[in-house]
Image 1 (tube, rainbow, N blue to C red):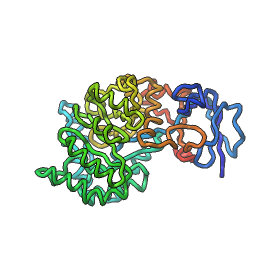
Image 2: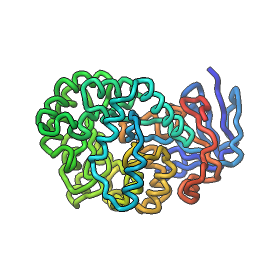
Image 3: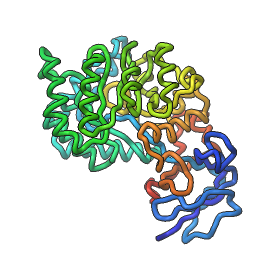
Image 4: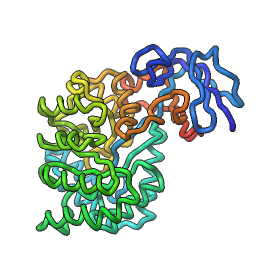
Amino acid sequence: MTTTAITSIGSLVTNDPALGDGSPLGLIENAALVIDGDTIAWVGPSEKAPSADTAFDAKGRAVIPGFVDSHSHLVFAGDRTAEFNARMSGRAYSAGGIRTTVAATRAATDAELEANLVRHLDEALRQGTTTFETKSGYGLTVADEARALRIASAHTDEVTYLGAHIVSPDYADDPAGYVDLVTGEMLAACAPYARWVDVFCEKGAFDGDQARAILTAGAAAGLIPRVHANQLSYGPGVQLAVELEAASADHCTHLTDADVDALAQASATTVATLLPGAEFSTRAQWPDARRLIDAGATVALSTDCNPGSSYTSSMPFCIALAVRDMRMTPDEALWSATAGGARALRRTDIGRLAPGARADLALLDAPSHVHLAYRPGVPLVSAVWNRGVRAA
């Protein structure tokens, strides 16, 4: 198996305190790493790097773990430019906009949906994202939800069943009937393609009792819960996520003190995943990352890439937003976009650069990871290795 040494790294983020300076980022200055196949074999000071079959000179630039985007909605068709334009002109966002994408997605062919998915994945990879989760939720029929997950599962293991995105327009007068469908025939058709089950627990979507029924049915089918929680208003989503030991409570924009305390107490099981692209694109209230971190909660950052409320695939952009508007430090934001995302996916093989971890990494055209927030909007990712192969 071929080995590759990346040497003369100005600053290496390992996310392993024991390997570096003792900080959560585990920084090593003047570093090197060795890739063996698809795995990290060695990290340490550049002058101590073992020999390898091939070498790559980082020339003093920073290397970070590949970003772990733990929340996206990439199986869709259609365009919502007009909606965004109207919202930026003063119209408030509501969950009803999802119906526009549902109609376009149902009308699209499998080939069209997959081509759009691949286009967004390539776009994200060029910006350093090496692991992504994505959801169904724009079909809302048994056949359309199952095909969305089938298409997604060909490109990632992190696939989420979100039949409970909104009540299907077909069941507008019978929401209870739709919950029965989501927990019955639709779940049976979708579970073979998914690892996770999710629900949009929000006014205008699903209330606490409906969300509990959907998540418990998914768990009984072998899926692990995640929750769209407390995005648009205060509600039961966070408490439900903690109660059911969901892997993540996502959005977490409107939190009571009890919600924050619950996430802090559940920091080992339930990650608070923050999605600043949604607030940016809707001019909504920012999540208070500082409040969560100071309380002891585990925080992840993700793009929420979707055509309606957060049409960005850029984790560097989300890092800059988190530092500027959510009161995170540059170190915290990078950790949350890498190791935090891995925690939200309950993975230990990604989000870090340590022996035994998957060789997913990004080379920055900068001497430090701090430039991701210091130089917002600048394409700093100059090379990406995914599973040990240079991919971008």
